[in-house]
Length: 522
Image (cartoon, rainbow, N blue to C red; front, side):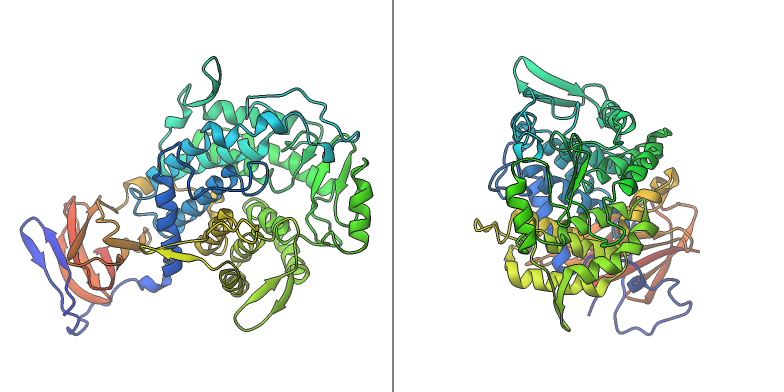
């Protein structure tokens, strides 16, 4: 006997799975709406666990150092992007679980251990300089100039938070404080941060923003563009107009080569040169290593992680351009494909991250079969572990796997066709926040895998699953149901009953499996 108890004042509605399905038929099929899968939910729960740690606790975020791709900033940023995709596509009618987590991750990325690397990097990176030196003074402000590999993510994260939740506390003066020491602080807010990035992209002759001094990376510059787009949606500004200047630069310098379709490594400002595997020159002493390495094939001719990262996020604002390149990049980057798994070519720059990036890219352009195969191969290679119903990818000090490996695979699992495109180009209107939604969910006893309000069909679709080891009953509340409206409740496609709207309406469910509920207005 499967039963749902719908508590509305003193009325208890019950339903037996053995009942015949009455007319009228359920107005929607829940299976046609996006849903969080089992491994995806386990990764989501692991991300929530990390977000809930004390702000000064970076356990389970360790890496070799803060200068490469294992750094805290990338882990925190891509966790946020995955949560944003889940919120927008699969849980739009259930905000209370992910909103505090995204806000907490923003707080986390502002902590000094995340950004203090800039003091060292701001002095210059010898491999990128014409003279192979470190010609710049040390800088402690991490967002005032350059360093888009940090500031771009911070701005993008805040932009997503404000669009998804309409909470603007990061706009308040002094809301972002970078404390280098007791007597040296740098005070910002979101508008000031956005202006700092916009000014550089607009005024730099190369109309982009450097990561390290003298080096512009194509993937990193996607994030300020998307940050501007989100800021314009929520503030009525026109910062994102500058993206045309960046796109012109992108095309002129062939940051994705129109002939090879390979994403460039970076653009060197002083040398006015694009570094690629076809032209691996920095015009400094390091050419003595890179040129021969490329000639003998040690330096990869393609980069699945650069193609994937740039492609997935650039698709959010240049979809036609990216979709022209994807088939060629897939052909270039995939080494072998069988019925269940796909392998990417050897990539020295990203062997522990390329699968997540390219799988997320494949999902974005609708190539779900390739994404599925890449994730399957990555799981076999990286051996994720389960802990109390959560799934995570442990750090392998041999660099075969990093914590970022798992966060990127979560991003890939969370993404859908045009997932990033719709997230940035079809933001929720203000009316979204007046529609029916659920709250006060007994998490983690009850796991919500789908919570979507279909405004055209005037139906709220909620799918739940029993949390690991949970028994008894769990409940949630439905809000924003009109007390003057008559609604109909379906459970697993079977009509339960019509009822008069209540706000809140309490739904109590036994913890004995999975359920699909539909509440539709008549």
